[in-house]
Structure formats: C-alpha cells, structure tokens
Length: 134
Image (tube, rainbow, N blue to C red; front, top):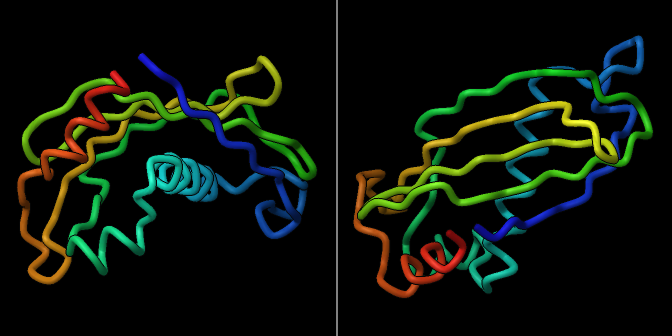
C-alpha cells in the first residue's frame, strides 16, 4: 500500500486558549491531505466537480484522538487506501508529530454525482488510480 504524506503547520486559529488543537480541526487537516492526495494524481477537487461532475464525500468517519497537537507543531498527515468498491473506497489516515501518532481515522468515502448528489460508479480511470494505491 502506498502512503501519501502531507505536512501542515498548526496555527493560532487551529487552537483553543491553551494552544491545543481543537478536536474538530483534526478533520480539517485530514481533508487537506485527501485533497492534496487527489491533486497529486491530477484530480483536484475543483476539476472533478466542474469537468467530471463528481465529488467524493465522507460517508462515515471513525477517529481516535491519542495525543494533543499544539500551536506551531509541524504535523504529517497520511492517506492510505484500504479498500475500493464500485462507488466508494475506504481510507486510513493518521496525523503525526515526528514519529508520534496523534490521531488515527478510518473514512468511508462515496462517489456522488455533483449535481444530483446521488451515488455513482467511480469512473474507470479514477478507479485504476485508486487501485494502484492499494
């Protein structure tokens, strides 16, 4: 399985008064990594929506918070494809500070028609790309 890594710095806006990352912001870090993972394959979210009329949405997320991220931390957010189906896929994502795992998440993604918001089959070329990542 190939792993994609994306770096993100914790800014003041990401934290509470104690300088600890607010729990919901971990989801934003995960989203940024997924968007950059698609961009790496020449599939930026904007292109998928405007040219192929597709969006990938989170259908389910399971997240474990293991340790706190803090102001100015440089984090590494990973994306690993765990499985693939006709209209979706499962990703495993982790947020680390150096070698310390701060958060682990499993995400079930669905492919939707961007205008009807109904599930659709993942196009063959995108399916092949995701399959190569496994």
